[in-house]
Length: 596
Image (cartoon, rainbow, N blue to C red; front, side, top):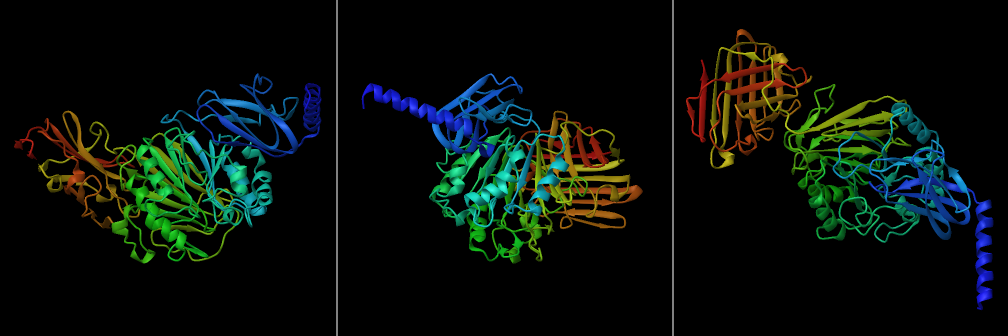
């Protein structure tokens, strides 16, 4: 081709693109992908090929920066980078010659906080929301009413996002048309479901699902690079999200996904770890029974143990068209009839701060086998009537709805919002030691008491006994199985907290009679406390606390007196204490003291 011919061809191409730009219409999006602390991918679809431009800035009408892509395409994906963390940017999409949409108050995005940074965040979670009908719209509108003017930071999809087959047209109807307003300002991330598998293959990363989304595969958004959009991880502030494939990728030990999962969990230092995948390890949904479906059994037996080995906090799934929610579980990998409440729960209360108190995990960050809550949130556009009776799942609701997650520092709160904007289930997980750093004020003393501690070289043989005697006590104030009983045992010396934490929730640990309350947990998994007995009386009231084993967490060396032992109801603030001014024995191995 001669130089003149090349110039003519180039001019013709430019004219074609310019003509297309003038006639182009946005038929999908815009929607936000791959959020990071310094960038965002903005995607959209046009009816004819054009080049791409995203203009952005601090306010509508002041979009002074832009990113261009000269490639003529109908599938536009522009990576806006070099941004400031946790900052709102307004934007417009279009071509190098004209805006097609945006530059107004409705088109904006917010970059993520720096990894590890702490600030309140709200996350919307929908599962099996793939019906583009009145049900799905009612769930959408109920969340909008519940949320009000609060910002939504992330939207997580739990699979089966577009029925019946997860093809491109299904996605257009169920996701991009129904949720256009949400998608243009809230980044969306998803896991692959069995209906997506009808039009694609997650092991091969083929099909419309993988063509329409841009998920992080190289650690761009935090975590270890996976090399696959079927399973990946990302950070949002102090939360690490792990997205897994419950469909085509192998789950056997040594398989690529499992090797990646372990490396990723080992690498994270986030305060919270949340995992999401489509098929639930625990469910009694209609057609989707976790005792029957092979994929669900495989996720429970192969994947869940690894998640718990690395201290996962919350697992989100869909698939069953219902809402189901577990206790704070650990170590249950068998069929439902092998579940033992006293063995497989770290806390078998309701987790409700307005019920018998939040679930408490004593460690900041991740510690193996502190317990996780498992949620099936698959009723975002359809409900299938059945009997929800899995013994590990005390909550089972046949209601349309979605899940709202609020994370604020060391507190994660979850609320199920149904299509009528009601909240029939809520739970909370609180991390960190429950005992204050210094003794609680305003506690009730008793004229008699004793404490004995054995700090054995073998931690499994450590022991504690504390008695509070001849005081005034209404044992119901300590806590009963049917009400708030978020109770902590705490011991302090002159230098601060020696040991202690919140006790186990739930009727399996607590019993009550007219004049007494008794807590028993033989394993001592919660702060090492194996028994608490409280007996009511005016001048005859008595509290006896026993503990044993490595969970006592005794520090080496002698204690610095005075020593204060306290039993605290963390809900009401009621507190009982013994203050021991001096010791009888305090040699770093044995400690004993008495009042008077």
